[in-house]
Image 1 (cartoon, rainbow, N blue to C red):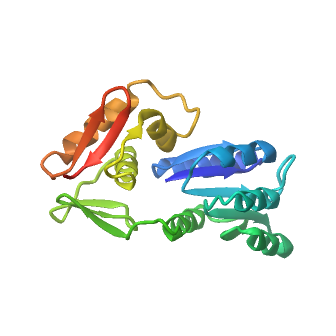
Image 2: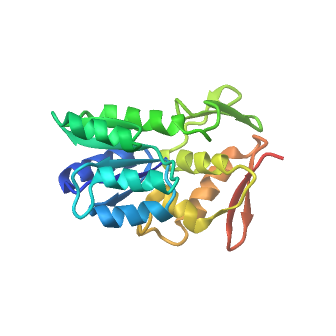
Amino acid sequence: MRVILIEDNRSLAKGIENALKDLGHAVDHLEDGLEADAFLSREEADVAIVDVNLPRLSGIEIVRRQRARGNGIPVLILTARGKTSERVEGLEVGADDYLVKPFDMAELVARLRALARRRPQVAPSQETVGQLVYDRVQRVLLSEGRNLDLPRRELALFELLLEHRGRLIEKDRISDALYGSGSSVEPNAIELLVSRLRRKLDGSGVAIRTARGLGYMLDDG
């Protein structure tokens, strides 16, 4: 899952970012409202976390502009305790959920997963590909009933390839989705990750095809 985090409290943002990255999710963090609005207008993500009070442009206005552009990225707004008006206004302009500060990190993660599953284009909770069964709710990949127990980064790669099944995904897009845009990733990191996952999928009827110099595609044909 790729998450865009818009929060100017650096301590809080760092905590959220670390928690999500520990679970294998990619996080892009922005602090300025105007910069965040521009970023959201050109980048894709599974969900966005938007604080209400931001420099230069409020979180409420960010959500309003996103919906006016037809951007359907699910949005979770963060509000201060007791600010009922912020919660109401955020939902009215198009936010999908809200969380009051301070909050439990486990609840934040659970709400983000629920929002990502709620998107109209989301596939069923379980999907069979080749001889594999992927459970999106539990984030478990099964082969003949056994958990393949993939490391978090390999599982995130499989999720991304499955989401774009049968279509080529560029290496740069994979890097952004797994590590966040602008991350310092070694040039061969994606190749090594793909190679490890490919070995574990061997014999499952599922293959990762390579378009040299371009990207990768999941193929179960």
